[in-house]
Length: 248
Ligand SMILES: Nc1ncnc2c1ncn2[C@@H]1O[C@H](COP(=O)(O)OP(=O)(O)OP(=O)(O)O)[C@@H](O)[C@H]1O
Image (cartoon, rainbow, N blue to C red; front, side, top):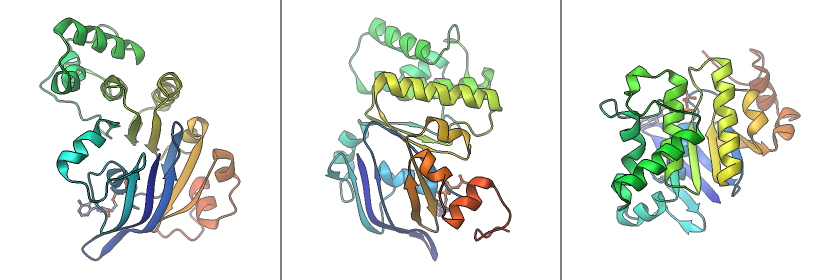
């Protein structure tokens, strides 16, 4: 479980997180939704300790990571996998080398064990015969699959997904969501997904939280959010131009 308590974060005079409190339930898929620029990525970075709050506390599986030093964070980071918006692959490495990278860095496995695990991970995300390709030679959806294979490889307890389907067509987007659902079922990790895919993301999320003006203004099951009476939530999920959300 990840817990944020009264988290404040500003950049200069810009307040991004403003006393945010939330819990991410263990072993479930949680979607974080909210307008662009509201701080969803900043929130993810606080969950994994890549950013520290100005005030407030962050707990990962009961441990307060707020004041942890770098060497202590390494142990916490072992619990996490992360799939970034752009899949964050190394362009000069092949698919095989990209996926093998965390195993080579963090384990003492033999070459053949690494090879078996990489092939298993690629198989899990439905990729075959792409070992020797470079990221440039792959479609956007394939890159996300490679990123997911790499995130899954060390069997993390928690995976953070920052807009895993941005820029993909609706069918590939659906396929990636299904893949997240399947791998989540199989491996049982805690997932947090920042997404703009509304309503599609509701189909795979057991828990949805809406970020607005630095706070979680509503959190519940997908059904709770669909039926929410909150005027901001209603406007946001209906994509209406009329309502309290200001945009320019
Ligand atoms: N390191 C940083 N330094 C200064 N400002 C930052 C930094 N990181 C984020 N911000 C600012 O914080 C705000 C929230 O950014 P963030 O990327 O978290 O938004 P978001 O909700 O993920 O947006 P989107 O949905 O468009 O991806 C933005 O105004 C951004 O410019």
